[in-house]
Length: 240
Image 1: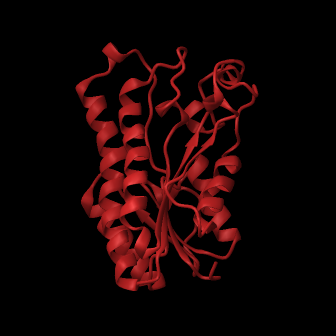
Image 2: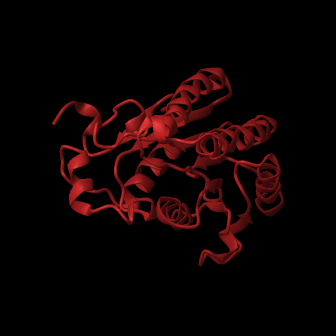
């Protein structure tokens, strides 16, 4: 890993995204951190950190992020798609507006930024990586946590990860995903811990650092592509 590789981290203002941004900074990366209110998140812009505010579901935001990376640091080597929204409820209770919001943030946010970032990586000619946080529930649903509609988008991200890993393997641009289980983050701040612990066989709730560690591994694992790495306390391994 070059000491000054440049990584973009989306949804970086709090929780898992903040932990990922801090992990990269601690390892000497230049980081472009983005979220709707990134500039009010407690992060301070520095010679190693650029902040971009914006809705990741807007194409204009993707352009601003890429421009910030190239202007501030001269390149893009890695992208971490952490921004995402999730809500558990019965299938028949999801509204059309909720569905569209999942598509905008989870899918369009991935597509717009990845297209521009990959074009930049191709122009640089030195490879790169894209790592996406999806969800263990996408391919291992749990009866007590119905979330079919958001999992349409998370499962789609797993699928495109494999497709793009194949498409860009010759260019050494790697695509991987982390599929988290339950994490102690703002997403679950209103859920009882005792219930959350029942959602995996280990009976524990992950910390944001657990996900950040997996993201760092995939970013730096030069021979790994097309991988969906479950960080879910064994929830994907079967019934418990």
